[in-house]
Image (cartoon, rainbow, N blue to C red; front, top):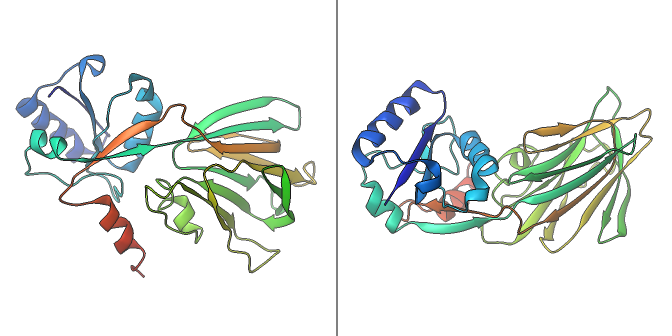
Length: 252
């Protein structure tokens, strides 16, 4: 097996990168069989965005603060662990947004697309699913659409549901909803197309963020699951991501 290691700026992650390189060698990313980010979920996410075009599997090693999507394999044989690893396809969200000035922005998100207020005033948002109005007016700090892979990130912090990786479901979750106050969001098949229309957009301007890319003064946002830029992420079979997701739902 040929590996390409890369690490975050964390000192321990840097040390681990040197250790793994000495044991397994370092190959140019184009010639490698596997890409191995060493750090936290943020590094994995960055790697997916930057290197998805290479169509190589990713195996993250946890040296971050949370590292929910990373593997803890410090003393295991990397060749054996990856050979027996479970594969999961991460399908990103494809976002197309139009600004008040009619500028068009496009981006992909492996975690979530979030619409947020830009001012002290709450946002007012109309929500459409498959071109049908499902909510005429949501008054909120924001609203997001999360993939199953991203459901334990911002979505969970906003009290959204945790989704199994193989669920083929998207989480639509409000952020500090004011009206309707008791609406907790919706779970949608990834075949659905979601549209946000910002109401009172001049007085209640909103921005949209696809993972870590932000666009401001937004009018409309269209979101759908996409096979473009799909990535394969590997998980240690001895410490399954399914168990992590199950256990997380019982942590208080």
